[in-house]
Length: 157
Image (cartoon, rainbow, N blue to C red; front, side, top):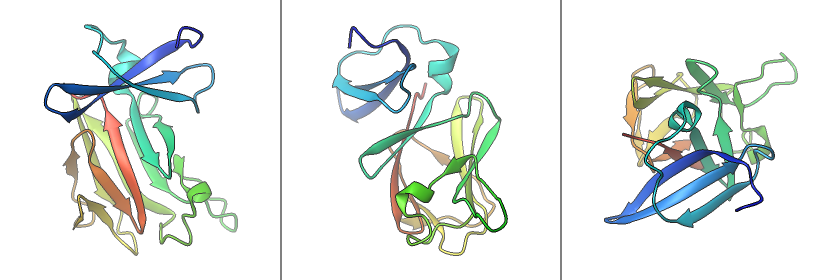
């Protein structure tokens, strides 16, 4: 960990009195280190806004600090459409993920997801969301787009 330039830190409560820290190497953003420990008293604004999607054993950072909301879906080479978070590498087409499947956005310190009238639905904790109705996420929630399970991790106050 000492060789990493760590700027973004994330806390996830696993059980009472147990915390998992995810540290993202800001030089190699694909590298995420997970360890147990305490969260520093103060976080940078970037770390406060950091949102991570964990799927298929890989972690993807969501650019919510740069934009007010992001579209999650799959790219379409025929139309040239590219969502903000492209799940094509995770078998999006085969797993039933729409081009513009869902939207993630922050409102204050809360994170919300809304299904964008996707063909195969967006689920949180196994419950299908009503299209275009925002649902407040909690850190550690399981989000399912089509048949792709995603763990949503973020700093929550």
